[in-house]
Length: 294
Image (tube, rainbow, N blue to C red; front, side, top):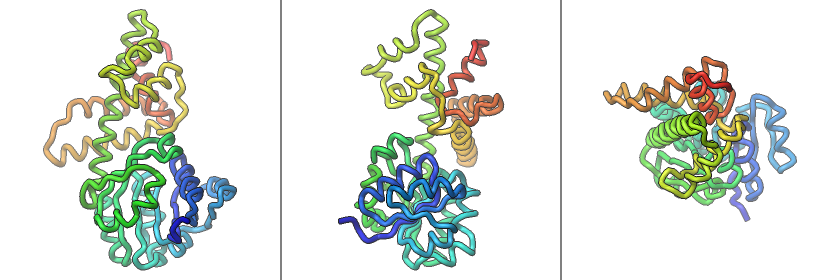
């Protein structure tokens, strides 16, 4: 029998939907708020309760999971005086959105001032990981609080504590650097193969199992060669993360030449009108730069 812990989920988008379904299926009491109410109501058939306001969500939840799109949305919905004044004492806010380390530290201070706890816990694994409960959860915050919530979080994936609040977001930015860079390199590899007369689909097949193999080659590489660019993770959000990585590197006095180049490629992609496509559609930008039909 699942814990009596009541879960409130802010955000019923591509990630929020499967997260809500998995937690409800595990027997938890789950409430959800979403700006577009139809997405929240669509979860009711899975035993999830749709609420009308963020204040209702905060008042009725022991654990609040935030999966909103960006810092502005998170601050508007959760970290404002009207919502925070309704939060239960000793409730825990779990920030699964990808934000900057500085912003999550500021949010932690606001949560603590309202007598609530706060965990910085961005995720990786995409919608497939959310559906299958195989997400990587990069946790920053109090170790005891994280350990107490492991049974709940185990339904979503593997939790690794990487440090205090802010460290989770640093880990996620590292993840995003690798993802964006690898997608760009896969795009170049397939474009080179295609221009030389090889079948990109067969090239991908040949690379599987070798040193170049990866989850990205297996999943996103297949989508690239099949031109399946329906967004599971939109390119505009990938650009947000590469920009944050470059800005943070500058703050630290670091030069990240590859990440800076990848950031430029995604910026060009968004300027070309492909921002709402999946981030694996970066191959279109590589092809565009080479005068190839897309």
